[in-house]
Image 1: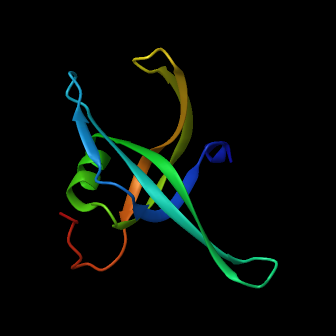
Image 2: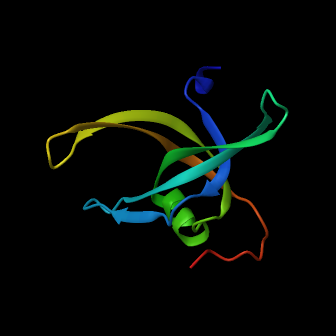
Amino acid sequence: MSNLRNKVQLIGNVGNEPEMTVLESGKKLIRFSLATNENYKNAKGEKVQSTDWHNMVAWNKTAEIIEKYAGKGKEIAVEGKLTSRSYETKEGEKRYITEVIISEVLLLGAKNENKAA
């Protein structure tokens, strides 16, 4: 059970075109947002869809797979861990961000579905 302490599994749609960065060390880093939807009925019995947005990060081989096959709108499943960090803007404001660091990705949807251009 120790490997379940910080584990995230999500299925959703890529919200923006993933942005690849190659660091000076040669490591590859990709960032994108993932939209997950939840459907439920409210107190009046009306069907409601709620969308949550998640900040995603992947490294190296996983980043390459996402860049090549997971364009905007593509449905994917990811597994990873949740991390939080802070940074300062150019204006000196402190910002906080929570991200999912992806360890595995599974491409979903039709096999002949091409990456969005």
